[in-house]
Image (tube, rainbow, N blue to C red; front, top):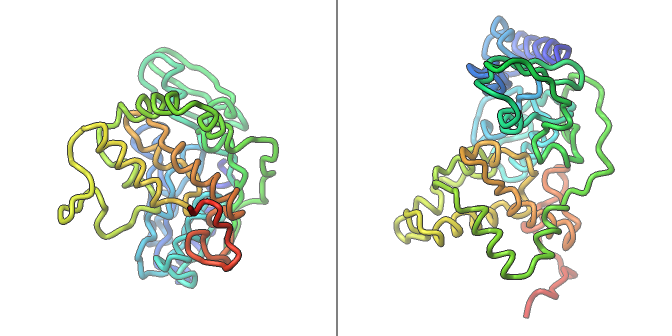
Length: 315
């Protein structure tokens, strides 16, 4: 990963020195282990702040919305797909961007590691495919593939789909994973089982809206949960209000979600709300052959009408 960091710094410094961009958006070391933070670098001498490792899971496309500057942005596969969506939805212009592509082999899940060790995590280092964790209870090593974020373990678009520069050669894409195994399992449940499953899934929700705030697709000027005239959803912890928030937010992402995992990563109580958007991703793929953010030449599935669209679902 140190070679990635060196190359990112080299590219960022060159772009800033040549005045091709006004700033570069990347990552810096966080104040806590496994918590790298977004970083805005505006001067060539500041590029040493930029880092890259398996703790860069935040989707940086979230910081492009409606910006007017010339921007360099570090982008892994899912970031690049959200950048494509931003361009298609006129939230940023392609000519504003210099995309620094990073081939990605997945981000590690801090919750999986925290659950497997004793005491506070003091430091985390990565060598090859091994993650070494130092904690108050000692040291422990993990195979990276065993502690990946769930979305990364089934990702089939690890390489940037759009880029201007690459920090390394593309990595091999995963071809032997079932992206929708968890969705298929829920679809196989009875109605009663499915109701009970979602009741348990959403019960811990505290309505903090971290999932919405972290999502690069949630950029409405006023979110439906904040509207008061009319009021679409109540402000209480009533289970129906909680469900309404999660289901409507998922539908707003239909045909747009790249399964970047930003929502689940941000959730303070660990809800896997990705199941909702993954179901809609599966439907878009099966009904329209559509996956979000793969190219700039096609409009999203729900953004176009064709005379031969299948209409079997209309009664």
